[in-house]
Every structure is written in structure tokens, then in C-alpha cells.
Image (tube, rainbow, N blue to C red):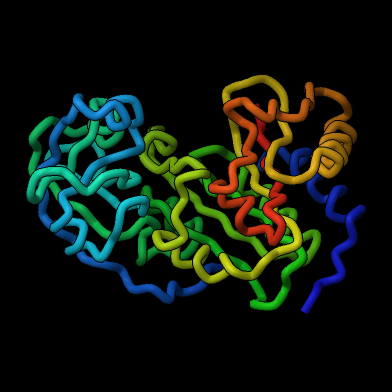
Length: 297
């Protein structure tokens, strides 16, 4: 069933979502997977682990116990760490038995010491918290899906909502409300700061198997998908795999909605914020790979 969302209405809603600037979950179908004991160790030999705080290597047997595979996100916790747990993307299954390896940045992400006793948990969003308020109250990370199960014209996304990249999930919710679109968002919180360090997952690494609600809509084949983000550059950049003409139209609506207060360029196709990789979830949610990624200072 196609929802008659007009192109003009979509562009205007996207522009208005940027302009708002300030500021009911579904039960997951995939049950929470196991928690296993592990030793958390530093590995400075693997360049990927050494330079990326979001990544880890896990012993193959331990990964099997978690019912997880390489490229999925898992939670890692450690005794006497600053945080109960943090999210990591598994990039290798060659760690020693019962060991999770990461670089110094990975240890800092959790606030853990080398060789600490800890745990690995085979899920990303917390299975007990279905809403933003519940996640905020518990310093947690929740996944939100609003979807009628049929609409396939547009999905509005914010993978780094809550305090990770505030207020991006309010923008995705605004677009969904304005247009009757689907919304998939995540919201992460941490009292006193640090939500970004603890919960951020790079868009090209997001694995649908780790996000049960995203997994529900991954084969819908939406006509369009838009994802809201924050970055450390100035202005507002429009990226994604969508054709340049569509990204330019979105840019123009954003520029109009913000009264020309910001520089609103199209993202450099070869730059860090291009958002045009087919591995970026906003592109594989769209049937033709033409997602739109909006980055904001």
C-alpha cells in the first residue's frame, strides 16, 4: 500500500525539521540473547582496533555463545568501569578464548582497565526499555519504531538520538508526524555526559541483526529514506546516495526554513560526511539506494 506523500510535502517537512532545532515503542520480536563472562584486554597490534574506539575483536567461541557474528553490535561491560556497558561493533573473531580485545580508545569508551573481568552481551538496544523516557531514566540506549506495517513511501531515521546527537530523533519524529511516514530512531543517554562515547554506532556499521526493529523494516523497500545526524563541522550538509537533484532540493528547503542563517552545502561525495556508501543503512532502506543524510553543526 503506497501512502500518497507528495514530493513537495516531503521537502517542506525535511526543511522544517531542521528548523525546529530544539526541542511508543513496539516490543522486539527477537529475544535478548545471552550474557557471557569475558576478560577485556587491550590490543594495540591490530590497527583497526587501535584507531577505532567503536570496534572490538571477540573470541569465536564466545561470539557463538552470544549467538552473534562478525559485523554485529554487542555490549561489553567490565568490573569497576565508568559505565555498566558500551556498544561495540565486532570486526574479528580471532581473539583468545573468552577474551574481548579493543584498543585504548575502546577501553576509554567503557572507562575500563586492561585485563578487567567483564561481560559480553548479545544485544544493542536494551530489551527492557522501549521508549525514550525509559532510556533516559535509566541512562540507557533504546530503539524506537513507529510504523503501520504498510506505508512504504518514506522512513525518517535518527540512529544517534537522545543525548548522542541531540535533538536528531525529535527531527525524525517531526517528519514522521508531518507526513504519516515511518520512523526508526535510537536514543541513548548518560547522566553527566558521555552518551556519544558510549552509544554511537557509525551508520555504515549498523547491523540490522543487532537492531530488531530495524530488522522489521529492512526489506520494505521504501521509496525514500532520510537520516538526521550531528557533526563537528559548521553549517548543515546534505549527503546520502540520493541523486544530486534531490539532495539539492532538500538543501534549498533547509536553507529557506532556516532563513539563510547557515551555510547549507551538499556534502563532498568523497568526504567523511558523504553518506553515500551502500553500507549506510539510510541507503539500503531505500529501494533504489537513494537515502538522504543530513548532518548538522
